[in-house]
Length: 390
Image 1 (tube, rainbow, N blue to C red):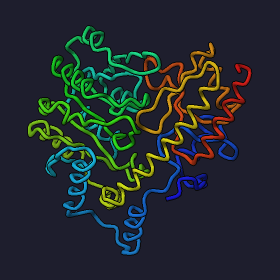
Image 2: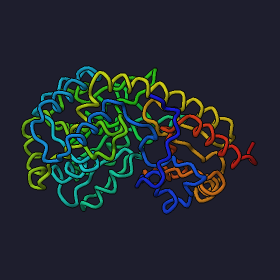
Image 3: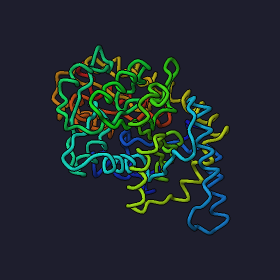
Image 4: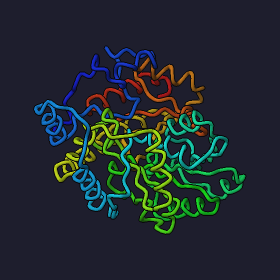
């Protein structure tokens, strides 16, 4: 595994590289793409071999007999997360944005409120609004550059018209790994307000030394009757194009409600994704993830040190994910100005903070899952673009 290898992704229908100019005005010829959350690394060899075996066979029919696939999921959750999952709990969906949409449709009605702890992954709000539901933003507290819960304030915001809470754990874009007591507080909040709790744990394998992810299902086992957990191989192994994810529901009644929606929409799995995920959730895949996290840890240290050298810029300490959340409030600049410096002067495409909801307005999100030489170059470009502050 060579994470330092520079792989040219332009002209390959890569959203990350081929859409950066239309969306951000940054040319892929001399710009750096640090926005959408996929990695510029090849997946582990076991995943590539699974795809090659499919190609060698040459027949691409419907996927059947998912015992090995379900077994791989159960093995991974048990070995990597200490969570005992039963095969019958698992639904396969076309990625977790699709899973989110199905949850919204299954557990809420038009006009219902869906609670988000903002700023948070922007696709949640997009799906909720498109389904005709209301986004209820419960702002996270930013305490000395670290997000924390503000449960008392959120309690006061509830009206009784809310039906669901979507939790991002670990948190994107803040990079927080929620502690067991914090997860317990969130679970109690969901019980108190009779909310279905959808826990999106897609980044749970990308946790840095010093932090430990706790699965909501083990942190609050008493809320199984309202808990839906979403997991995927896609972020962990850089196979987002496979569009595959899992919605895991232990409670029979809750599972029946979700299953009815899956059946109503005629959802069946993508065979490429099934083979890739089965191969990924393996000892070889686990070794690759361990090496990846070590490499990403080095990238975050390079990036954070570079950002810290620029007065007015502050990178939130990452405990998980490869998504750096940088606050430009200290520059005194309006979002249009600091964003223009990043895009036009530095030639970097990064996610705009306002798209993540309340509290994100002064931020940009930078994807660090790229060869370290590019991270170092990004730091140099940012330091140059804000040189007048130094």
